[in-house]
Image 1 (tube, rainbow, N blue to C red):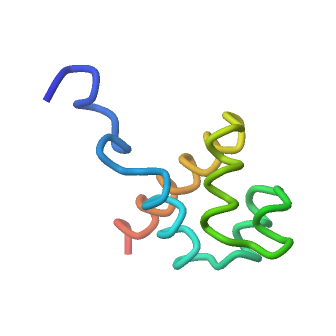
Image 2 (cartoon, one colour):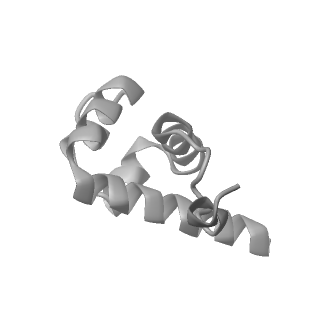
Image 3 (cartoon, rainbow, N blue to C red):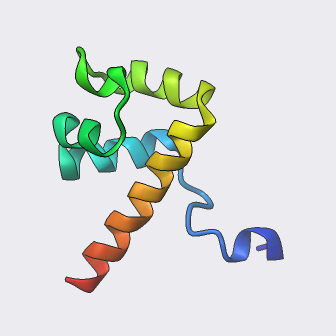
Length: 77
């Protein structure tokens, strides 16, 4: 593993995997409360959300950070 990826906890995870884990843990409505984007509120789907997140760096970063927070929270339990 290269030095660049060694300290990246998201290395090897796809955006789809991250999004599906968040939806399973929080649900669409709660996810919308954390990251206010319409694709999480109005007729949400993984496909439409992925399309939006791939084009919107600020939203993707929020989702990645929320995922990392969720993983840390689950590790504490």
